[in-house]
Amino acid sequence: METKNTSLLFGLLLVALSLLSGCAAPQEEGTMTAQIEAAETGAASVNPAAPTAANPEKQMLIKNAQVKFQVEDLASSTQRIEATVKNADAILVSTFQHQQQDQLAMSFKIKVKPDQFSALLEQLEQESIKLDHRKLGAEDVAMEYIDVQARLVAKRAVEQRYLTLLKQANSIQEVLDVEQQLKSIREEIESADARLKHLQRQTAYSTIELEVYQIVPMSFSERSGLGVRLYNALGTGWQMFITLVVGVCYLWPLLLILAGFWFLRRRRLI
Image (cartoon, rainbow, N blue to C red; front, side, top):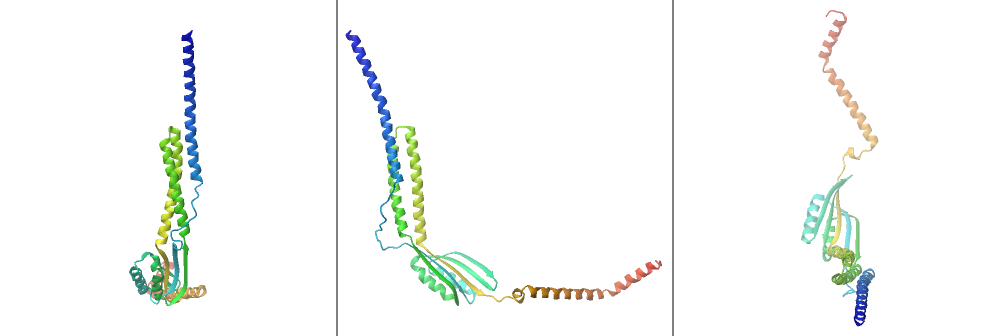
């Protein structure tokens, strides 16, 4: 009887242990799921602190200028402009020569350091004999730069939380869930980092778009309208007709021979 009671007690103990072990796994899995959800909430609610620069008065300006003016001689002015750009340690990005009506023009796109922007622009304008237009602009991107930088720091902190969760994952599904969130946050980090680099490049150099032109007188035919051109065409056609008649007159011996041959054929003499 005592042996039966012992066996029964041992069986009940095994059943209890099985139930406890069965409940432990779901509890651990639920804990990991809660941690992932907490990390996701942190990633979705990234709210960086209000942008504050170390030096609030510091500006990050993107400067640009669009200038067009007339020059006395395009070729010599082009040489001097290129020399001026080189001496200012600026970059001549592109040049383009074109002609429109009575203007022979050259366009320049120049990148220059912000501290040399005004001085270079003043030197270039010394080539002008007539200023058509001069447009200056500047955009301060300091606040945007600080905002993107703060968001980048926050997203990298979230990335570190995901990496910690990845080490704690106990199943393949948990690993896949964390890696999916890691992929998403890393894409956001790459996008923010690319924006920062773009702003740095934009503020490192200012842009000058310069167009200079020389007045080139057109010929009479280029100035003429449709009516004058038609009159000229009729006159040229008449001159060609007279030239043809005169040319035929030079062939009178051949025409005489042909006429005699035709007359004899008519008389049946040949």
